[in-house]
Image (tube, rainbow, N blue to C red; front, side):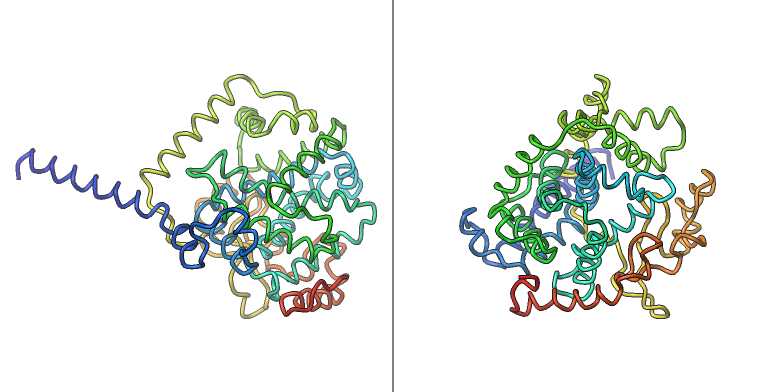
Length: 395
């Protein structure tokens, strides 16, 4: 086989691969819209027709297949954004659960678990309803949480993933995906006892309400800075050296808009940092869009089935401290297990980090693990009646 033949064959193979990528990259979202009768509908028509079940499926494919990393980061930064509201950061600092380093890792993971259970399963399933009921219970323990702040947090969960996808991913969200975000999180809000009349009626209204709230209530405050600093420490958990942390800190600042930075009293990033971040985002966007086949296996945050011996669930991987992470060989002795050992950090399965997994109805701070469990189960049963046509269980 001569050189010309080899080059020609390579060129044909490359062209065929690129054509396959181009065809398959949008296949999932287009197939879903077509098979569910949403293809070609206007935004107003989508608001009238999108069902909760379909919205749940959209959220699931975004989080598991299309944009798993950025979707998760967006939810993390949605929570982070709330800490620039003084009334929220004051409550968090007072409880100490996020403001104190010894509690912050557990509190971060507990929030991750509850959100993952909600977004990974139908809202009226046992697991999602337990997660919502548990979140309601934990919030009820802090009567100084303002209802307006709870609504604002809900708006961020709805609006931030589409915003992050638009800014950082290989394609922009579709109208169907934005409407699905509105539908899904509006239904979560109802189950959180947020008065339905206070929840905006469209995704666009959610964005407007979020921005209006921030203009009025997001302001520089020492408690914002304190809680924000503790949270960034968790984000930089795996960065090994002080110079590395300083570099990563500039990357984090580059991802924050000016209003948020000012609210956190963080200051602006150095001039080179946004240039570097934007360049990396552009390269990643190009590679994913034109050179990578779509994901075929889902990225899971929590196990689909409980441990048969205990009935408890596990997180699949650790973002920082290995709370509730299943002590599989890969998690304990794989690459990240060895990295943790070298850095002197705990590994999956280590005693004292929820090594037996979690029970949804008891997720939360250690001192509340055994409280409210039965109350949560009863409320979850009421929440499940919403999907059975029972209406708002708290009306």
